[in-house]
Structures are given as structure tokens and as C-alpha cells.
Length: 415
Ligand SMILES: C[S@@+](CC[C@H](N)C(=O)[O-])C[C@H]1O[C@@H](n2cnc3c(N)ncnc32)[C@H](O)[C@@H]1O
Image (cartoon, rainbow, N blue to C red; front, side, top):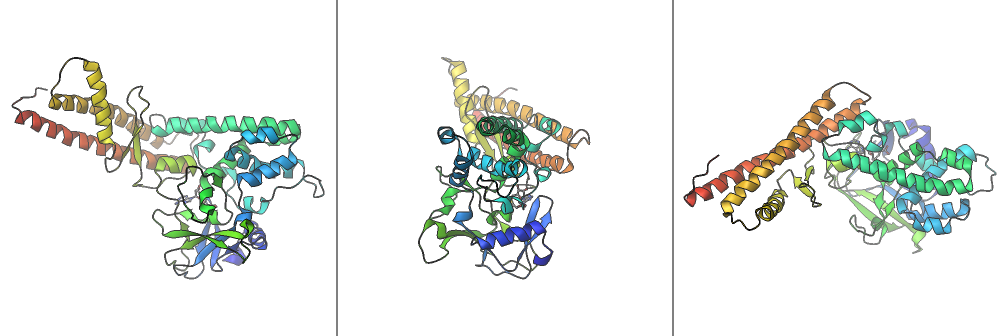
């Protein structure tokens, strides 16, 4: 219960409410493997606000830029080119850097503002996205879509870190020494696993605005995810003054919450690949899983769903490729269909075999591989295999139909 909450949570609550935030009186934080979970002391009925964060407490790119402009030497032109992620990650890392290198209370430099918030976030060893994977863990993903995506993610973040580091170094070598890759990865993981789109802060909150930037909302981001959990976002005015600073974003539960049960959020419909890359967890039998297929050197990316959406598009692309290869030669439609299905099936046999091999490697209890990462990968690979079975089954059904068409035209197909 609240009185048994860790000291960091008590400090967070104090800071949060002193700055206009509020947490439902029957909600309490409990330490768990991934960080914190939020639970209900008593039943909480649908329609109640669970947590409300003033927009003035949000970590936005503007907050990050203002701080960096104040502490760095001559940053203006360079900061203009930084992405929202670079700004926010650097702002987060500077909390640890300034505490370590510049700890005196009376230092004239401005202090970053979100220390009590960062103190309740999961420590680096609890984070499990590919940014934290060991080389052995990354290697286990070979043969899956996630392998390339994980390597790309690491390379992108590493480039960002180096860019940020070089500006920090111009101000202080000591700061640069403390602005480590490990810390940047932790900040980037906080952002990928906890950020909300800035479009949520507008008067008509939306989760899908392409121009939106990532924003951290202390307290609101403390809830774990449950697929389909009914919640809503409400932008409200904390006082009568209609200024931006007085606005707050609240998470409202749209389901009754039972005593002692976890209070959950809904992060939206995400595949296990997205969940692993950004959040470091996977859901068993996730209905949002997709298998990504690309034909040869084609740049077209086909995402096949568990219900088989996307298969037809692969067949169409294969048919185009085949027609180009045949050039002037004419081919009956049923013959083209069978040829397409043959090629698709061959491709799927390779894909499935790579997935089976990846699964078998992950099951071997060897190497520098954490048990929870191993389990997460098995869940992911099982989902990939499920989709590949859906595809193979659909190809068989399509094969039968194409044969029937051939027969109706009096053709006997030889194998
Ligand atoms: C926005 S935070 C949620 C609160 C978090 N547990 C904390 O300590 O603050 C997202 C992180 O919580 C964990 N998480 C959320 N939902 C989860 C779920 N359904 N299963 C496993 N881990 C989950 C993951 O580590 C994820 O990166």
C-alpha cells in the first residue's frame, strides 16, 4: 500500500503533487521486474481519473532544448538540427551527468527538472530491448525479421549518441566522459517504451498524427499495457486560467478495477516485433503479429497478418516479376498462378526453415542469454511461425483452386 511504497516513489509523489499532478487516492505503486506496476487498493469504478499530469511537467523537446541552450556553450545552430529524440535523450542523460560531475547545490548552472521522475523509472539492467541485448542475444535473432531491425536500431541510436556527445564535449570534457553510450541507450529506451505522441496534448487528443513528436508524461506512463484495455485520454484545465501551463492530460479508466488488481493502460495495437524493439516485452499469441516478406532485391515490404492479409499482394508482385522474366512468351492465367504459388511456397519453405532454426538455437540453454530475453524471443518466433503456417495453408488452398481452373479448361497438370 502507499505507506510501503519505495522512498523513490514517495519522493516522486511529493514532487508530482507539488507541481500540480495527481494520482487516484486508491492507486499504489509496487516494484516489479520491469520497474513499477500500479495497483488498486480498493475497487475503482469506471470513469474515474487514475492519473493526471500537468503539461508543464511533461518532458518535451522544448523543455529539453531550453535546458541544453542554458547549459551548453554556443549550442544554438547545432541544436536546431537535433531531432526531438536527440534533444530529449540528451536532456535525460544530463540529469545523471550533472549529478555526477557537477553535484554542488550552489553550482550556478541550471539543474534539469525531472530527477524525481527519472528516479522511479526501471534501472538499466531491467531494460530488455535490443539496445540492451548482448551480442549472443542479437545473434539468436538471425533468420528473423527482428535481426536486421535490431541492428539498424542500434546503429541509428549510436550515430545519434555520437552527434550529441560531440556538442557536449565542446562545453566540458568531464561531461562528455559521463555522457556514456550506456546512459544514452537507457534514455532512448525510456523514450521508446514510455513516450506519448505530442498530438495527445492537443484539445482533440489523437494517437496518430504524423507530425507529432515524442513526449514523456510522468506518472501517466507508470501503467503497464494490456491489449484492448478500455481507457481514455482527457485534456483538461487545472484551473480557470486558460493558459497552456494549466492544461493537464489525464488517463481515465473505462472499466471497473477490482481491489488489489493492476491498473492497466492500453498502448495500442502493436506486434511483438514492435513491442520487443521499443518496449522489451512480447505478448503470447499476439493477434497483431505480422511476418515481413520482401522479394529478392525489391524494396516493397509486405506485412502478412495472422488472418492472411498481404498474401495476395505478394502473389501479385511475384506474378509481375514472372511476367517480366517471360518477356514475350505467353502464359495461361492458371499456369502463371501455379508458377507464382510454386515460387511463393519455395520462399516460405526457406523462411520457415530459418525460423525453426532460430527457435531451436534460442531453446539451447547456452551463451550469454538472459532467461527473460530467451522467453521473449521464443514468444516472438512462435508468432512468426504461426503466420508462416497461415501463409503455407493459404498457398495450398490457392494451389487447389488454380488446379481446378486448369482442369475446367481441360488441362492436365503434370508435376
Ligand atoms: C510505460 S512503462 C510501464 C510501467 C513500467 N512497468 C514502469 O516501471 O514504469 C513500459 C514498460 O513496462 C513494461 N511492461 C508494460 N506492459 C507490460 C506487459 N504487458 N508485459 C510485460 N512488461 C510490460 C515493459 O518493460 C515496458 O517497457
